[in-house]
Image 1 (tube, helix red, strand yellow):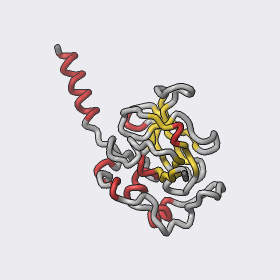
Image 2 (cartoon, rainbow, N blue to C red):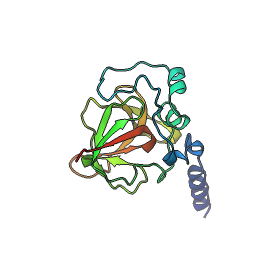
Image 3 (tube, one colour):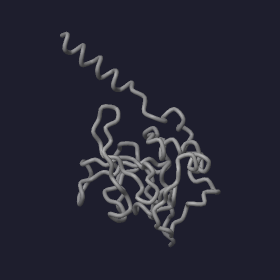
Length: 177
């Protein structure tokens, strides 16, 4: 009985842990993620960017900065793309780097937009993330090194990967018809 109580208390404490930047992100859906005065945003330039966090903080919205530059996480089911199904391309909201096609997006029911592969191996980079007592793989934009989300091994074929991304870190451009 004592073991069950210890397990219950441990689970309660874990579920009660705050996720970085969650409290400041509930209004993401109504806000534009990309500030119009971002001189580094380009959908054609592929050169790697080396920009200080102080500079990014002046340019990006507080919500985007908290997630992309401080490795925050938006609340599940609050981002504008978690259940979007329009055809098009997803870009990094910080720098404009092309990241994913909607053809690789799938309904994962986790509350964040999920993709089974990026547009190319050179579009994202991977880093070990041991925060909050977990071992995960962080996904960053290869052009600006901004945090996008995490990758997991529970996605669909053909890759069996789930790129679990924060909507606030993505811009979407629909296909022209």
